[in-house]
Image (cartoon, rainbow, N blue to C red; front, side, top):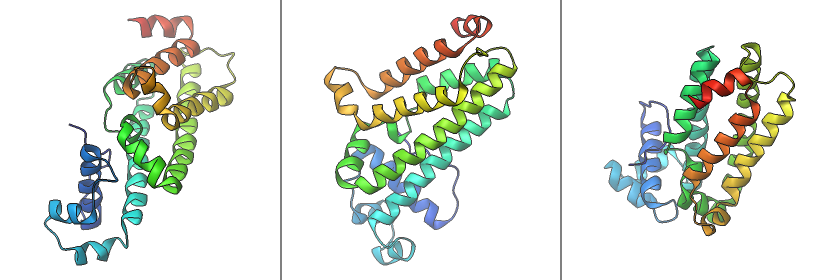
Length: 207
């Protein structure tokens, strides 16, 4: 079952975000009303509006929470300070991760069609987040001899982050070719990783 990617939360506002996110994953954003969220929470709409003035405001906060969760996971991988282990964890994460907004077409569709401002803001923030972390991954890999030292690391990070964003925006084209977002993520990651690794790094990856 999909669960929205949000760090552990304790207060009421965060509990609302987590519950709404789980509903959106199962049912889509458009089809879930504030009444549905309140029913799931066992709270009145009056209480809901104490924390969020509208569904749009809730979605804004929910997307911010998703980005924060993604960033936290990336920080954990970088903190390993061991590129060999990072490759193993990163590849496993890409193959298994299913609780990311970008992997769920009905969420992306609803955001694009009904919440274009939120979608544009989310894409820009995800792009910047991915670009920065990818460059840091590559820098760590170069230092440890696992990534080619002749790469333009900043440009490589920009190109891959843009590829991920374009895939999210144009997911209908991917599906029209009888592929899904999870397959796309796995394939693009495989191509990217093979392209940046040194001979030593490639041996590790192939294992």
